[in-house]
Image (cartoon, rainbow, N blue to C red):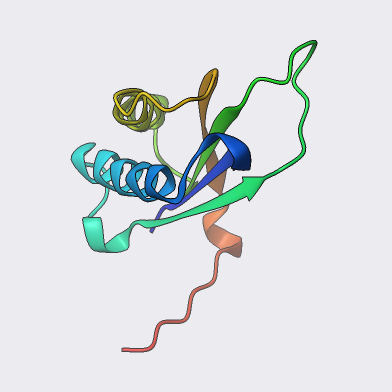
Length: 114
């Protein structure tokens, strides 16, 4: 069920890099043991304009949107699993950040076609 969204500096990553990034994130989430592989949704959005302080160094920011109810240790384990997997790719970015976001279970709706 988690929705994983990677935002990245468009000029820093090739199409192959983005494909590796998505596969690595998806596998890292699965390897965390918190979610089944078939339930993980992973996508990426490039951005072409950005600023980050005094220097415009490229970066990747990853949001993991999960249903509320997981304890802090589960959320931290998920963030660490994603970050550790992505860092091993040695992408040409200055910073990689991961944010775990709780989605309210009571307001979450889903429709699936079998």
